[in-house]
Each structure stands twice: as C-alpha cells, then as structure tokens.
Amino acid sequence: MSLGIWQIALIVLVIFLFFGAGKFPRVMEDIAKGIKGFKKGMSDEEIESKKDDKIIDHVPSEKDKTKD
Image (cartoon, rainbow, N blue to C red; front, side, top):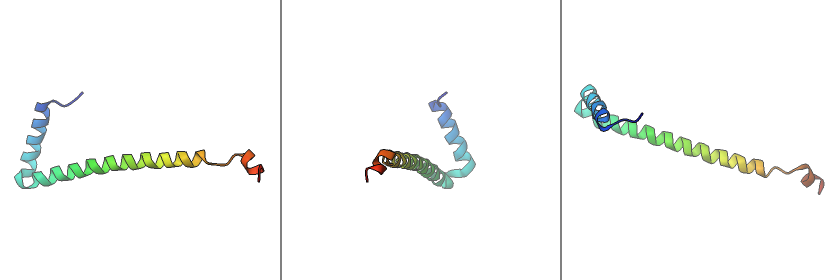
C-alpha cells in the first residue's frame, strides 16, 4: 500500500494548516534530519555487524593454538 500524490498532498496540507507557514519549513527539516539519522544508524549497525563477522572469522582454532 503506497501513498499516491493526492494522499501526500493532503498530508502536507494538514501539516501546513496545523503548524502554519512559519513552522512548516522547520518541521520538514526536522523530519529530514530524523530520516537521515535513522539511515545513518542503520548503516552504522551494518558496519558493526561486518566488523563482528571479521573478528569471529579470525578467532584461532585449537590446531592453530597447538602449533606454537
């Protein structure tokens, strides 16, 4: 279920009426910052999980321990 152009226009109109012309740009900026922060958090989580996978791959096995 995706939003069509009319649904988006109606949502923007309601937000515009609710917050007024002065606060509207700030509200949109805050929403954009929230989305960017969410995306950054998701990518940081992927990077951390990849680092954890690499660490797990490099754990020495029992054979490697007995070679010394």
